[in-house]
Length: 271
Image 1: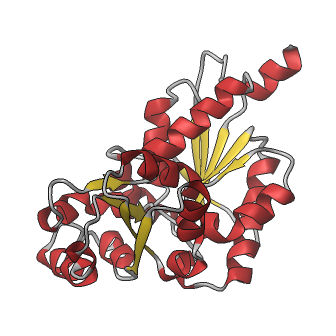
Image 2 (image 1 turned 90 degrees about the vertical axis):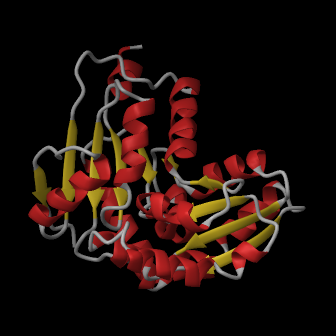
Image 3 (image 1 turned 60 degrees about the horizontal axis):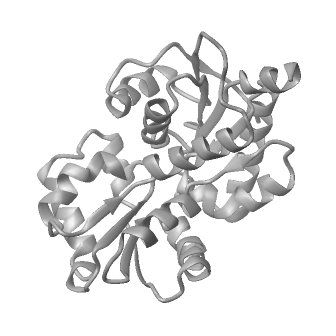
């Protein structure tokens, strides 16, 4: 029992190519207020969406090794690209549980859609990986999937332009043909994209549900911890943030994502 409690009190690792995973961390904090977290943003290599499969796997492997060295009890890949490309490799080569964002989001979307038409937007790498289409087909093959890569969304968000007219115009161009369909659910297949929700709501019909990664992933993690008796029993919680480049910029932009100042951010080299 002592060993189980010791493992339970370890932090949860969360990683992303940069800042977007902070939207998942925010949901995890809300769902699991007693847990401690280590967040890793690979800011030296962002974005993953333009990288090759081999490169994304290599970066994800190195980050996973780093987090395991910090004795995390579970890792959340808070990045759609890494989840789409590297999840199976990491699960097959790691001794701790690793949860991606794709399956929880797909299950949430399946339970929400009434028209059986679901849109998915994401980076080119995520869309080209077919990870969402394959997951929908395995869970509910009757659902029609409409996918669209939206590569300009991430730089728009990181420039702080998420609620500008420029963002609205770009979103209208990307989503114009998709919105002509009978979709009633739109998956935000990139963890940056929740920052765009106010802008997206200007152009998306009110009946269309927006499904982002945070809540579905947080529910999945909570259920896993409960099933394996791994909820923290500690009276104290903590968070640490690690980046591979420009910690000051990460802190400044990251505070917009979390809605608060981040605790001290440490720059590390894991290459």
